[in-house]
Length: 341
Image 1 (cartoon, helix red, strand yellow):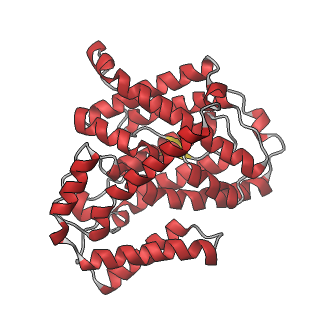
Image 2 (cartoon, helix red, strand yellow):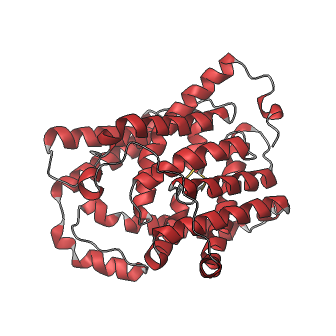
């Protein structure tokens, strides 16, 4: 990988811009990383591990100067199904296999082919993902208790309907406050990340006015560890590789497509031009590295990439900073994160 072209003319002034953008997007990535991990059927810290390892690798080795990588909503229904069927350990193996596939996609110059996926397919796909994410958050929004997750959409809807009587008024109030702030802040303060503002204010309201009235990350999943997991290479056997090949292929195709879409969004915002094949290789390296430290599959995150650009990013350094910020928060403030609502 050649880095010289990406950092030609780099100076302290540009680093300051990258530093600010990286800090902002890093703070935004913390709640999103945990939320997507939980929605995928794993504990929240795995989302943070993914942001740190995969996020840094994508910025270092990818083909877009502004790409921010990590767990995304597009992966949620796919990963949740894999966890339900095969378990977390096999999800990590499938993620590693997907990483190998992505590297091969890039080396065989398949990046440009992915750009020709018809727009209606992309629109329908993303709309379907949005519906799935929305429905999966209904139980959390209402504060429902003892809701079991199922692989099929209609089973989840039936489960929610059965548990409507367990709603929590305080959880609903907190969720409404966060939602209103998220919607209003984009118009009133467009430069301030709405997700971050909603998280901070709604959590503060809950802690001050009705503590212990609803579940927190800590009460539900336990305290988040203040360290990355030890390096562990997945146990790859022929039987497992055959069993997980379809899942790994879906992860690779979806991850590759979304990462290129995200890079194209960045190009439109900055007037730049990314390298699709190099982006696939970078995504592959990231997805091979993340499972070695407990990370789930990652890809380019469109919203976080846009946030990165809006806050002044000028190079991949901002993406590295974003990963380092999450790592520092994990090492120093993990117990505080556990009190998030």
